[in-house]
Length: 113
Image (cartoon, rainbow, N blue to C red; front, side):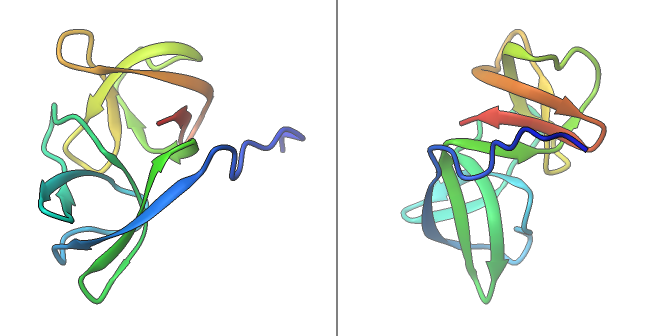
C-alpha cells in the first residue's frame, strides 16, 4: 500500500445528462449540449464519470483521477492517450491527447485531466 495519495488534487466535477450506458469509472465524451456518453476506441475524452444514475453523471473534468488503462506502453510521465472503447484509456501516439501520468497501478493509472 502506498503512503502517497493523489485524491482530490485539482478536482473539478460537473453534472451532465447521460445515456444509461454510462457507468461510474468510465471515461466519457461530450455527445451533445450538456450531455456525455461512453467513448468508442480512439475518442478524445472530456473526463471520468465518478457516478452515474437516473440519467445524470458527475464527471471529473480536471485534476488527478484514476482511470482504467489497457494495452502496453502507459508509463509515468507525459503520454498520448485516447479512449480504449471499454471505459478506460490506451496509449495512442497518433490521435491521442497529452496526459500526465503520475502513477501506474495494476488496476489503472492516475492521470491529470
